[in-house]
Image (cartoon, rainbow, N blue to C red; front, side, top):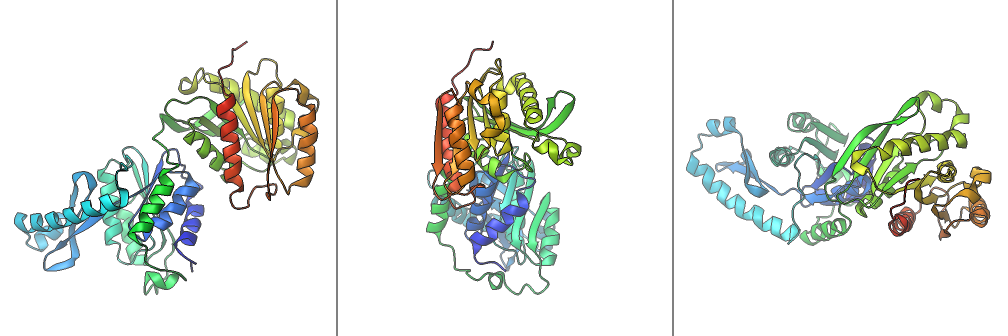
Length: 432
């Protein structure tokens, strides 16, 4: 069913991507095998990664039967029904808890070192494991996450026994499981490579994730963007001490859910920039394909949305930049050419700046054009547009990349180029 845990994580992330975002989600993996799966989920969602170290408290005479669980920070969850049924005394429970608490703290120190645990309070916590047979540990992890203040708990697993998965719906707000075969037999039977994950691998994955971790945002929410006579759904995320706001202008046939734009948005957020992703068209408008390529219409929407954005207290006074993709890049340049637009910088990813036509020489915002080296037609169009631009400008080519930048590492390079350009050019501008 799965090549390895990384493959399982990538597939699981695709299922989760539609309704979870990195701005308010935290991904926690169950050590050890759940962490490689969780790493892929966190990478795609753009969310912080951590481990959730739990220890089941087993009945002394029947260790597989848990009477509770403990987690970091002194969290303790007890099932009173099991305690009564097993005739456990306070001394019995204390002895088990003392032993398991020592082991929990040892593991937490081993995995996390000096790295502080990610704060789960008020966050959507995605609990990830590589599979579930009985669900005991996963249930404990969900309860511990809840005890740490999670506002919503999502249990995400590649494969699980049907009965166990169903029972876990009581512990989590949502359970996402890709496959629930009736003849599960063993979790490892559904992986081509199910080698044991070592402590060292867990530590390395956390280190890699921590190098690009995201702090809890000062503000992050779904918003309704006002654009003249229409209201458009969007997502606004503002980190602490934001240096500017980047408005994403998606290309034809895309939306605020564009995985490529969301990946870039996450990178910019990590760099201290607020981001706004929104739908340029209403669902009814999208039915008419002419609207998708109506650059003046899209640019007008963008101008109106920018005006709405400047009135939001969360980003008031911050300089604004545009990140446009494909036809959205033409709309971004068109809007940036408006005399009183006050747009500080524009980045175009695989854009069609030629569609901005005669507006190009009027653009005053510092403009970066990013094109894939194998996107030859669009590369020629961008070179021609660069010659027409009269502002500060640059053309960066991503070697080996095609139009959608789907090649390994290509989109990461785009994000780096955009980050560096925006952070260098988003100096406050005077409003006219």
